[in-house]
Image (cartoon, rainbow, N blue to C red; front, side, top):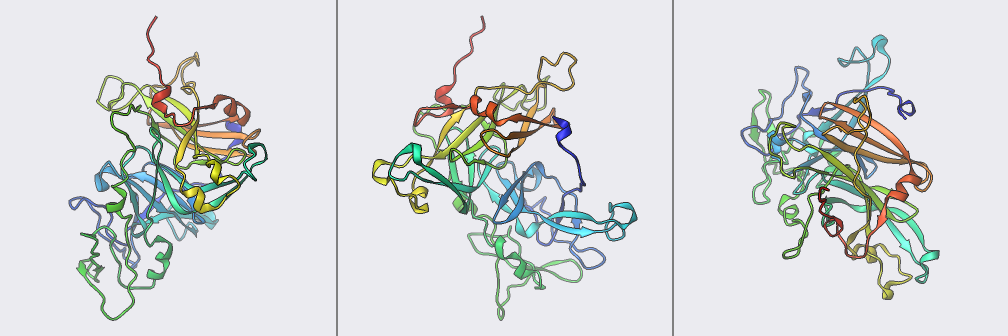
Length: 392
């Protein structure tokens, strides 16, 4: 259904180097200004970028192994500026309005340690109205804390500390720029770039200070994969960047993948993983106990963990390049997921990458998705539902 989509305009996401960017000392990028005294904006490696909404802003999540390592997932709110061709390279001919999109190094949040982490910014408040499941109502509210689904199996959801990103604009009128990546033992080193572009320590003593905290890695690293002793687990990995609310059922929808073999060793097929398959899945808060019937407070919901609710069988996307159309590409990575219209009879949009070279998008009826999703028993995880395929 390619005709349903039209590119209105486009731009390349840039990095504004207003503070040091990166956690690896040898590769971290220092702050830089251009010849006009403005912070330099540059192209940067945003690997596997995906978008999500939180606190009224559009964010991007990605990885940058050379600067941050390969265990952390990085998040930044995106800024947009309207420009013309005379103001910015790449503007539309004739001076028609275009825009520049960029992220600030000072607004970088890190989350560790999962695989293709998906973010959650909305939660369903379910009112059972006395416990009758047939009369329950679902209200979606903004989550006061950004959450991350770090693992699909077992379902592991943690809080994300976004630090002081929400009040970052107060610093823009300051001459001192604080680095979120120089925290040692929770002590912040305040850095300033002088006129020669040299970074010097500048700890203010007689003015208000708004320190920039990166995501509190000391806290984040405590959220390891939720595994009991000797618990079986699968090698399923989350893929989409934002868990999509399903208003009718109070669930959050995601898409995940497997690849065979499970390791990331180089082979004749690909540099890393290959032969991908995908599954749709949903998660939701654990059902309220009998004693909680009729109670729909947000505090009550927060005390119940997220659980796997429904899961589809594995599938692959039909190849768009093979003449027969009866096979799939060996590398397929779905990262975009959204619902247009009703979650019962609307349209599902899925975008995915092909062989790490090109992208595609398709739509499918939500009625079909609802039929693909199979309810699991309470407490079941993905590994409990997998079977060994024996060649005939």
